[in-house]
Length: 344
Image (cartoon, rainbow, N blue to C red; front, side, top):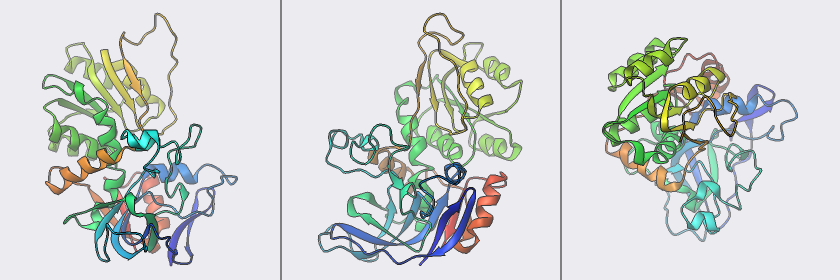
């Protein structure tokens, strides 16, 4: 089968590999669509000594059940399914508490990231993938090609938003930084599930126009962004800031505009940072900061329910699987609105 394989630093190739053989508790999925994410760009830029070199990429995937293991009773051939982003054992303390993104078996402390397809295990940018049967969710009428990015582009914002759910009141202001693959979904989720006012920040006028079309106040990223946000909030600052970029300017903006007692969620992997000093600091008192990653299956099912109800929609651009190199280049150059989906 054809796979998109990470062969060297910043280089992917189409490589033929055997179709996986499944274990009794596994399902073989024929991939219909595989999403391409900025984190894939970060992954392949980690140097020629990266232990993940040689692996099949892709942590967003959907398709049809092609074969079921002898012990599988929950799926049948032909079922349309979404492949879970975060892999888990389903039995440890964290999994049983509903925190499967912190699975003690699949994602022990010190791991690069929670285990996922395409990150340490074979990914979805292929014609087939073998997965444990409990790592699938039904699509119930959603197109598996366009639904593939829901595994991350919807899951990750949903998880971050759920960590601040109690703050999303009718009089709250939420700043969403970066209206790309994750951010355009985060904006829709907030709009669909809360009455909070949304301020969207981006460098791209087209993405700001997209945000405005979904009811947000658009603020161009730049030296005047913080002043504009403070003006919009009468000097108080934002109740919640969700940074889907994570570069130094966006981290600086997040810290500059958060309100006293507010919450910041740094989702983007851009490498920015800030210095924290216990005591009197520039940041307001009572600010809660978290570094969420991926999400739990409960977050995934909430996102799927919103998609099935037509309340959120992934903006996708299709590329043939064989054009993966061009797709990676286009994403790197910022020429894509929303999400790329590779179609085998």
